[in-house]
Image (tube, rainbow, N blue to C red; front, side):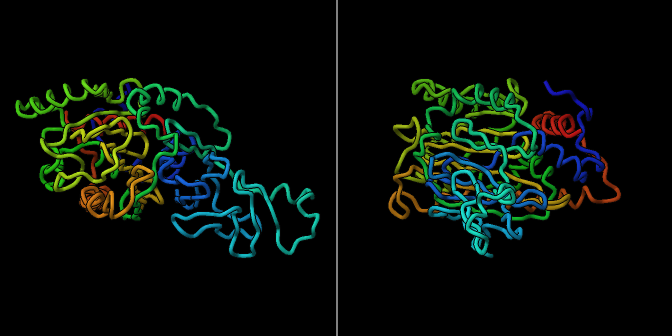
Length: 396
């Protein structure tokens, strides 16, 4: 159990806008950067920015996914400027066409240099800088610290999530990216995480989302109608050997898992309740009418349905600005406009995320006020409380 450093309150301003503290956290803890489905084909890459640095993850020709600093060793130009793309056989810098081996980032060819340059001592310092990236059941986690190799967090996480996620076979390249988007927002990333860790704001602010879910789903409700819906779902899940018991940061202080029923008759997370894809995924032989959700400290949340996966991560760029990434992953054989239509699939979370952006920007503006004081959390905001104390502990 995480110690309550804040006595039930949110962050003091000195912590919210402390950039050095944020950097300590991301040097110390593993954070989520995607799934194998986000870079499903060999040679595909996905860029991301954290603080003032640019990085990319790359699916090597050998099948392994690695992370690199997005900087050419020659004159420090960005190697890739697109958010997403694919290399053929080499990583090539557009500035002077220096090229690097796609599997490990070692220098392949330095244009305008002597033929024997690759054998020189100088060339040894011209490989791409790499970052520590590890896979957990097809989920990709990264850590910035150059000397940090402790995988205890990931080992515990793997034990906790494996019973729930292993049946999806995310590690076996059975998925592909259907759609993705990212948005830079004028909000402190901690406010985004606090917003994500509760749904007390949902009734008023997410009316569309609550067409799919009971408004009693997320806050430990004892409403008889919801309990009846949940008990019916539990019987269905147990008949299919789908684990359903919630783990709310109990076994691992970075990980929460919960399975929720959709409203009766809803097959997937679409506004009309109809399937998002005709290709089922993982253990599902039919449409489950539920979601399996994961929340990871410090920066992510993921929702699995019977026919697709929606991933979300947030990374700080500065004290008052962050980037939010969302992707929708489908079965590798699913064909756009035949098996799925991306707008139908993405509408729910695109609308919900846009509504949350407004709230998070408002929270950031309020936290920046000279009159700001930390607010107290209600009992239904226990996961906000957990996140705040977790952050204080590991960022100090």
